[in-house]
Image 1 (cartoon, rainbow, N blue to C red):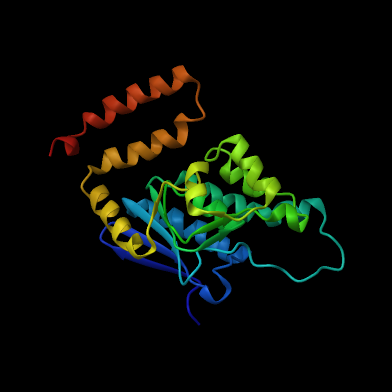
Image 2: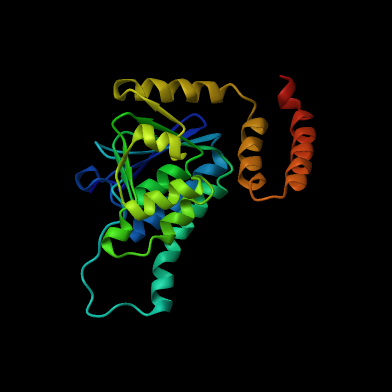
Length: 241
């Protein structure tokens, strides 16, 4: 049986690939736990992580479960969703920046994962959607992944309209960093990776560290943190090579 998540390494670059193209790379709960663990492990030894989906789609969401005779108790439900929050946290706590590559549809959980990447490059064929409200599912789990990525009005529109938006609109919403022609997606990502490989490792990691914490700080705290990082990183011997 093929691995549901592929891990490949090229020097200090690690690529993680959702590998269930036959079902649009839908993610089961056990797969989500595996993904979080793989990100945590790869981040310890990599300068950069690349995250993608195999086949035509990036990720069509979570794998659906069969109907239950009765709804779960709140405590059980909380345990079931903790694995999802842990995946979201894995993207945020990764010391190494994560580049997402979205070639097709990113729906629900897939949309959240695309947004959580530090840089997301999308094909012009990519599509994004938060369909939960249309399925009578409270969507605050997915919203929590986007809350520090997408402005309020755009997030509210995504959630309430359940509309599938194209890559260009996703760019204006802040879901992605850049949109490129489908045939140029691989080359554009390769060029970005090559550029990031040239940067001193302390500076590369410090940018992620500052972005992870700075947005939640007061203005003065963010400025003070910037001063400290600037002095610490720029005094590193690796910055003078």
